[in-house]
Image (cartoon, rainbow, N blue to C red; front, side, top):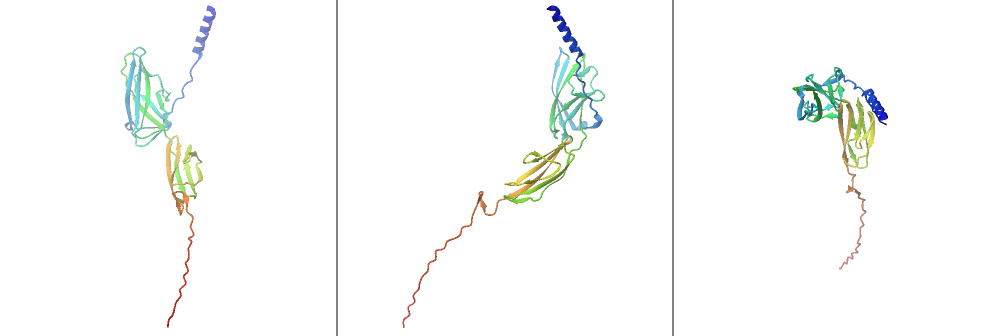
Amino acid sequence: MRYLMRCYAALVAVMMLAFVPPSQASIDLSSLRAVPTDQVGVEVISTHFNRRTGQATYEMSVTNNTGAPLPGPVYVVVNNFPSQATVQNPDDTTNDGKPVKIINIGALASGENATLSLIWKLDGRVRLSFDLALYVSDLSPPTISEFVSASYNLVAGQSTELSWQVEDADNITLTPPGSSVSPSASQTVSPTETTTYTLTASNGGGSVSKDVTISVQPRLGSASGQTLHPVTPHFNTVFATYRHIYRD
């Protein structure tokens, strides 16, 4: 039995050595757009150092100060750190081996911040310092070249046709009703009250939207949703007979 247990343990050890985790695909920064460093706010929220393992954990926040949304995902590249320090939890690496953290969001709005965690392995006594650089897709947001209505003023019960033309979009949504639509199409709507329709188009470079407002007036003669029917008046006619008496 002991012999079988030793064989089993040896087999498990061989299998563990043979297992090699899949390598990460490196990121080509030349295909991305660098966010100016003076337009990015970086703040260290908290740090924790484990003396036993030699690991240092940095909880950090990055803020978009560009004045415009940054399309996601946002790639955070770690630069200028000492050779005795290694990032233990990168999401990817650049072509030249720099660690990358990826913030998977649709877009980082202007003034908005996102958090990330960096776990460092320190070899000996190291004065840790580093820089963060942000990169985003160089793809431009889609274009809504047209979003119009055949009529902008309706009477309750009437319909109108919305039409639009969108370029370079991966997803297009018309709200209401919140459904996906084609880049070049039209749709008949019958709003029961004044309604604003929003067309939203998005791709890897961001999202854009346009609004169309349709004003709806109640039908003539309507009140509280009820139709008033005309009433025919009834006249009671009184006939009087006058007798004129003439006297000489």
